[in-house]
Image 1 (tube, one colour):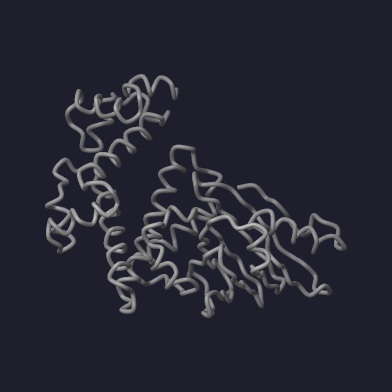
Image 2: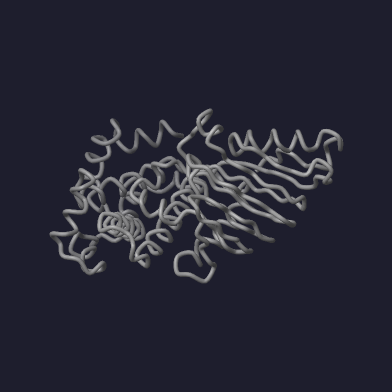
Length: 318
């Protein structure tokens, strides 16, 4: 993770402007409000985890960041943000909801909508930027749960919080192939935590509850892609729904259960074939890792999906 600014490295009369520039370059156009007479102390780092952008910041100077309608009209990338408080506390406000997040808690907010993040004392935090499309199935739950704290002792949030912390601290140590996998894990845990909380919120519509269920099904499949006996029947039984209802869930996404499992297995195989650490593993063994035991069938599926046989893909990536 690259250090973008260390306040102590900047001349004192330039620190406020330099800090404001880095914040806006890293997190997008924001109205930064700091007492001009307050001494500015802190540091901001940033990096990428595949499709996820990660910022790690610490400061002891009270200030606030405002995403105003005017700034949104000027520049409006379709992003969600997940902010994790690593130490101290902050106040997050969006959609007429305001919450104080304490150490270990995280919350989601929408960069396309006005919000305020404020610190009144020393704070260390990590901010993860996710494309809207990565949480597309949870659009309504996210809207209902923006600025809601996820505590470190709540179900999937108890797994997500510590992982987000470690990712923010160790980002620069990950190899590209590991970063791609970790990105999927991060997104899966965040979506699982949101879907889990959505299930507990009675005001959500049936359509929203259906989306939340689909996200849980996706996560269930993702964790069991290596199981050869993974089937629609197993998935339906694990989620206490009928097989017919499960098929209807996937029809709403213009796919089938079997096609989704096949797609995810092939994507995992493709990632392994591009991984230099696995170059000695036979192609057939890569396929078997992800539940595809028939090597000839796997080769046909892979070529159909990616335009070349798996062995050729591996040589090209090498």
